[in-house]
Image (cartoon, rainbow, N blue to C red):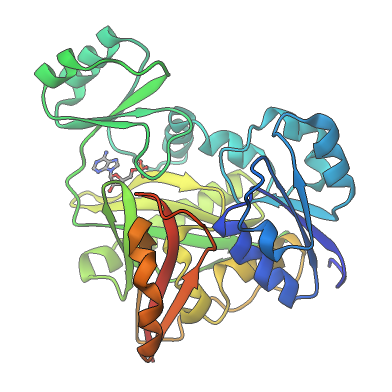
Length: 350
Ligand code: AMP
């Protein structure tokens, strides 16, 4: 167990790091943030901040030497330079390596018996046309790497649209469009000793590729698919010998849960756990990597809704504080750009 006063390093300076730093402080730890951007909303609530590039080996080594354990909140941290600090890292960077490449991720999940949407790797325009002919349209062309919140994605309605598409200069994957009843995620925490606990699964609604709301209880057609999805998520965690919070996103379909993607970290669809569960995803991630006993993941409310505040939504948000059961989280970002996650509101009915 990491003793109080120990230092937890977090790679990445965004809101997920900010929300992990708070329970870490509550448990008596110091937090040291490492991020390339000077403006870091996580560093604002942390004890120390190293502002350096991901490839700066000397800065990374000094950072790791100053920390007892290092984790990440940003899943696109380049994996190569992390090899030198691997002994301090939890989870193991093999989880990052798998999740950073959509093709690798889908093949890995298939090898465990999971079913992703039909897909094909696409490295040229000819391969795209062949993929659309084989899998059918509509579909989505996605970059294999560096996509998030719907970025790096092109919807393709027909073969004709595929013919006219200007190909991105990046390796991609074509996925058949899935007709789903709803979307949900399985969020679990796994301890160093291999104990696994799950939070309840909310129904997640996305707008323009960005999560808009997470609601619990989820409708029956989602609730009925949570158990098999959990079984797959547990296998993913075990195969990676994962430590900490892991998220797997699913589509609820007629054929059962269809794997969409995984995030080897705390997740936006788990923000509700701060007020809606006995122990939040953020606290349990810290507990797992610090080798503390895991906290109870039970939902403590009858109804929960988390709504993201995107761009200008955040400007008038303080008004919700007049509502009983509404909890406001603002991430401290100065510029309310379109599509930027500025905060969230969780509404709880007990
Ligand atoms: P992703 O970043 O891949 O999770 O995509 C963001 C959102 O786009 C998902 O949560 C879905 O709402 C939608 N989406 C992505 N891939 C598909 C697909 N193959 N079929 C239908 N909807 C999709």
